[in-house]
Image 1 (tube, one colour):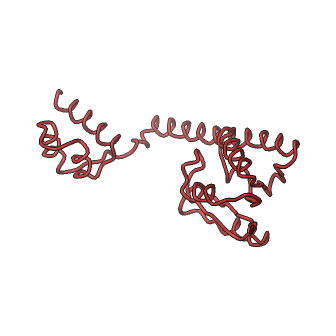
Image 2: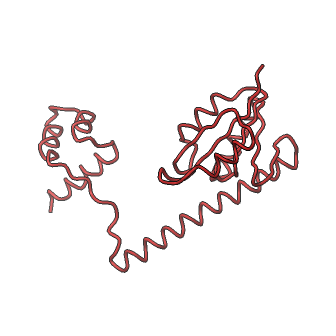
Image 3: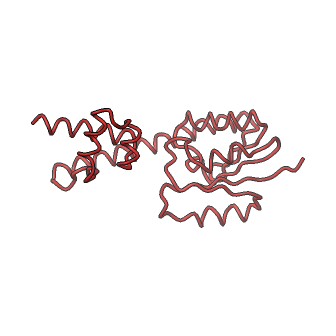
Length: 191
C-alpha cells in the first residue's frame, strides 16, 4: 500500500492567490494538492469532493488552517468523521492539530467553532455594510436579469407549447431565477 500526503488548499475567490499555501505544502513534501477557489460556507466544492473520494487508508490530509477546510463546525466534524472512517489522518498546520489524540479531537472541535463564529461575523459585517449602503442610496441589489426574448418564451410556456425546462434553456436561466422572473413579470402585468 502506497501512503501519501495530500494537501487541500482553499481561497474564497478566484482572484485570490494560493501561492502562500502552496509554498507551505511544498515545504511539507506533499504528494498531491487539491485547490478550490470558492467560499468555504459548505462542502459543495469540487476539489474537496474529489479529494475526499481519492483518499485511502493510511493517507494524511494536510491543510494550512481549519478555516481553509471548513467554515462551520458541523461541516468540519462531518469531514473529519469521513476521513476517520477511511482511516485517514488530518493535520492542520496553523492550529497544530493531530486527530489521532483525544486532545487533538477536542481542539479540532474548539477551532471549528471559532471558524464558524468568524464566518458569522463576516456575514454580519457584510449585512451591516449593505444596510448602510441602502440607506445612503448606494446599494440597489443585484441587477435584474433581462432577456429580450422573455415575453415571447413566457407566452409559449404559459400556453403549454414548451416546458418550463425548455423555457429555462432558451432563456439561459437557472430554475430559481426563471421562477423569480416569472413572478416579477406576472406582478408587472397586474399593475
